Image (cartoon, rainbow over all chains, first blue to last red; front, side):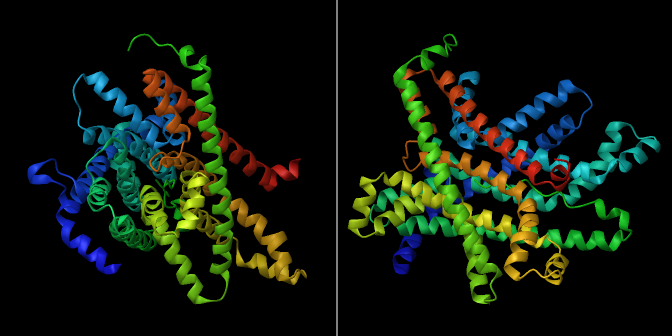
Length: 252
Length: 235
């Protein structure tokens, strides 16, 4: 059976890696990575804006965003993908590629989840930081930009990597709307071979495992380093409240 | 969009029947995989706390696999892969007994067991070891101090992540669509194909999912309130 798997990898590694790229759209593992990297890159600023809106003192800003976060927490990603697949072509009136639809959905979905992480990070810093910054003459936005966010975001790096892992796992759902990613490539291979589905999907699982495991390992290493550094720099007991903002785990 | 008309779907007995059937299947998958996951998680937890290092490694590998491979890929491996390796007698029986739903329950349950066992483990570990010593000093045996002292605190600590993961298990039950189980999302897509009222039926599906997820969160909030010693002291 291992021999079969080696043969499959040997015959189809290019399809699994980049899809039908020179002759068709980019796909495979490369597309999975690009899609998740773009999604997290766009979700990051979105999540900061959403977190600031949720912490805002204006109800008109706070309530709609809170509602939005609850909707994304309570509705399956699959349902949101179906919505986007239906609404985006309707609004734009254009033939939008499934890659873009998946990207928009992931930015929205992960942005909402990440905003909870950012919010927790800001709240964990404590109100004293903001008071001190205001007392030194910073405006609200200036204090956020120069005092609060740099600290909160630094503490959040491990959670960001966890979100990146979650995003990679989420991209598999693009299979439903035929996004040409790794899962799609594997099912193409499976359709060509027909006789070895177990081997093909086992290879798929191993590839995802390798990527996600290494990123999780990286996150844990950074988390330990940040914890050590913070313990070294601030040893006074009152700073113990600066606990790590843990991600609200979401596993798709 | 040609006019928003929810009643056309909600007053059509055929569509309502399909929705109810889909909802039933979603509940069967959710409760089935939840029970499987919780049972397995408790077994994994016992192995983790047992003194054998080897069992510990195996559980760690189990958890690592299920947390690092996308749930969808796990389901595909079960349904498209492992299904074909089963002896024909067993697979024949599975086909007669709604194989899609069974594999959805097994796949989601095994995956979720990894998360549940980690939640419970971190909950129990957060209980101060002094509690056990104090319980022993007061004359409790191991089991009795587990039952009356450690577990009540550990479960209380583990409750918030358990609730979060129960909600995501409920949401993940929609992934069973990919292996062809006729659950709620499947019903929604089928009604869309029949009625062409995409907006309305998606709205109905979304609201159903949202309401049930919020209900699970509310039950969780109620449970944590009930288990809170401050609340119990007051009552």
